[in-house]
Length: 221
Image 1 (tube, rainbow, N blue to C red):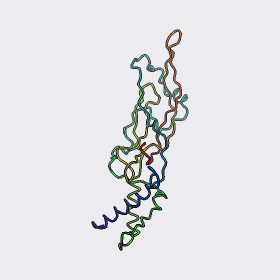
Image 2: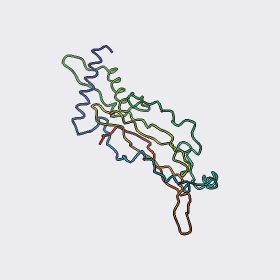
Image 3: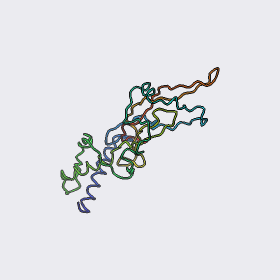
Image 4: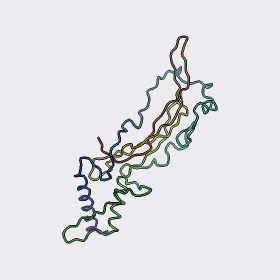
């Protein structure tokens, strides 16, 4: 597209989205409601540094621990340090437009940008498609996955966790950001020590560890 076409495209986009925003305060053109998941991702635990609370070598029998844990999902859990700390998307830049995959959301596909300026013709189907593709890419919120080392008091100690890109707004006009939209729980074993009469009693106990599985564009507040 030449300069005049680019300007017209930007005007069409801004006007169309502006009309949608007027329908409600912080109502996204994507029609996504914010989901209260502010507790994710989890903040790292503050452990007592005293090694007396650490499991001993005899407490780390992998066969016994696997039996106690039950289901072991190798996509998210690892006993040994993973070869790659990141899972293939470590180069994602918050300020770059990411390419979404799958089927275009129906809310974006339904936007036709049929706004006419004076005698200028309405945007062509090709231009509409380009605007829809750009809007879809700009509002796309991928889950960025990394491997976290939880320390020796968790088994397995390496867990693949997700986070949402949030350094820039994902909406036009600005104001919305990528936030957690869905999560799941993994079962881990936690080494827990309790002071009892006669000394310290320690054992592995099962705990639920939440991880982010989906991010969506939502209100920043």
